[in-house]
Image 1: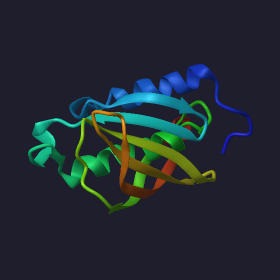
Image 2: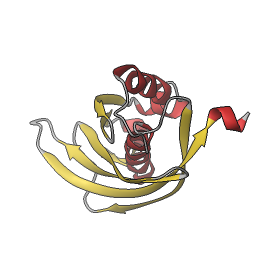
Image 3: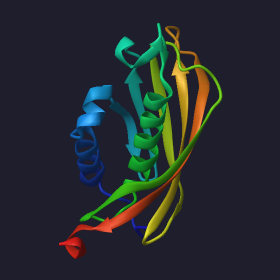
Image 4: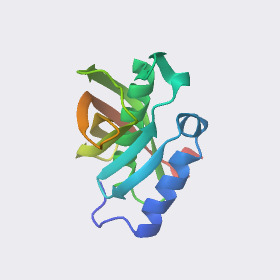
Length: 149
């Protein structure tokens, strides 16, 4: 959506905004990398979110995928704008077990009102080997905060 790449401070503000959300803190999310149109995030696999020992429940996998995809969408918005998920679908393809999950979010198509975004979620084992466990496709609604007041 932006004609010029967002500044480093814009990306830092995006990370601060995302990590301030109670759900992000509950899940223990952290940014590994962020740039215009691409975000990589990780989440530890904690027993409180598992439905059997060491295997995450699908809702936690969905949440990480959604955060990564929509944060990527937010990374291309101009200053003073934010976004929110309006639709998402996930395809689970393997168990989410290991030491952490890693999600790589990306922008598929950015427009003024809506941004289509996606993420691939990987289970990471103790040796660092990644296994694709889910793919998410989402639509984020872009919101001009000044116009919303």
